[in-house]
Length: 238
Length: 274
Image (cartoon, rainbow over all chains, first blue to last red; front, side, top):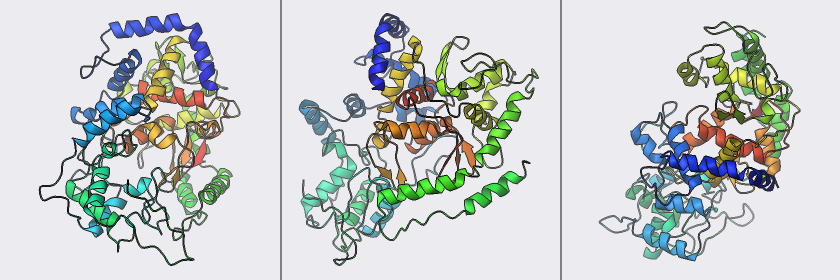
C-alpha cells in the first residue's frame, strides 16, 4: 500500500525527478568499474555507496564493489529466470577450485568447530576481528545443525540428519563441497555466501565441514531414539 | 539521577534474570518471542533509557560549544525550536543543508553550524564506547522521545526525498561483500531467526512499525542507548563491510526507506532491546 502511495506521489514529480537523474548522470557519477550497463538508479546507488564509505581504506572499500553475480542477483531480487540461472550456474561452476589430491573428507571435529564459530572477517575502525585468528563459517547462524541443536538459525534449511541417506559417497562429498564453496553453482542466486570463492574458508576447512555434515557418527546425523526429540528434515540428494 | 548511579543501575538491570530459554530442547519460536516480549515489558517499567533522555534534554537546552549557544534554534523540520513530532517525520529534505537528513545527521548539522563544534570529533565519538559517553546518543534519545505518541510519517514530497527513497530501497537489496549479503537476505521473510534472534521482515508492516518506532533503544547487551545510526553501522559490520559513515547518505536512504514501510507506526522511545 505504501509503495502505491509513493508511486502516486512520484508521478506528479516525475519531470523534476527525471531532471535530477539526468543531472546526476551528466555530472560523471558513473562508476569506474562498471559504469556502462548500470541503470540511472544503479549509478546513483553506486555514487552513494562510494560517498558513504569514503573513509574506508582501499582494501576494505573493495568489498563494496559488486561482482557480476552479486549485481545480477540483486537486480532480480534473487529470482533469476531460466536464462540467467543457466548463465550464473555455468559461470560459478567454473569458479570452483578443487584440492590437488581430490575431494577427501576432512576432520569432522574441526568441521564442527568451523560450522559453529562465527568469528572472523569483520573489518573497520570500531570493532575489527583479528585477521590472525582462524575464521569460522558461522553455519549455525542460519542453519539448525544437529537434531539437538537449540540455537541454530532458520534463514537456511535445517541440516539435522543431513548426511543420513547421502552417506559419504563421492557424489555426496562433491555436492557438499560445491555447495559451500560456491552455492550459486548449485542454486543460482542462492542467499548462501560463496565461502570458497571469496576465500572466506579454505578448501581444507570446507572438507572438514563436509566431514562434520556427512559422517554417520557425526552429531549432525545422530538421531535420538523415538519419543525424545523429532529429527530435523532429512534432505534428499539433489 | 546522578551520573554515578548509571553503571550501578545498568549492572542491576543486567542481573534481572532472563525468562529461562531452555537450550537443551528446541523451543518453539513463539515461546521465545513471548518470553522476550515479557522480558521487555518487565524492563519498560524502569527503562534505563530514560536516563539518556534526561541527559539529552539537559544537553539540548544548555548553551554549549565554541559559540556558546543551545540547540533551541535548531530546525528539525517543523521550524526552529519545534520538537514535538519532528522526529516522526524524519528523514526529510533540508533547504539549508541541501540534502536529506535523518535525526542524527541533522543534529550533527545543528551542532556544527549553530554551536560551532568541529564535525570530525563529533562523528568519531558518535557511538559511546566503554566509559566514554556519547552526547549524540543522549540528544537523539531526547529529541526522538518528543515524538512519542506520534505516527511515523515521512513526507516524501520533495524530489530529493523520493530519490533517496528509491536509493534506499535499492541499497536494501544490494548484495555485496565477502558473504554476498544484502539487508534483504535476513529481513525479507517471516519468522526467521539468526541463531536465536528473531529478524524483522520488511514485508510485514506491523513488524517494521514496531522496530522503527522503538529506536533509539536501550540495549541491554550493551548497557547503553543505541540509535538507528548505530543499528545501520552494526548490520553492515556484521555483513563484513567496512564502517559506514555516520549520517552518510546510504544510512539516511535506508532509514527513509524503512520509515516509509513503517508509516503509521507509533513512536515509543526509548525502546528496550536485547
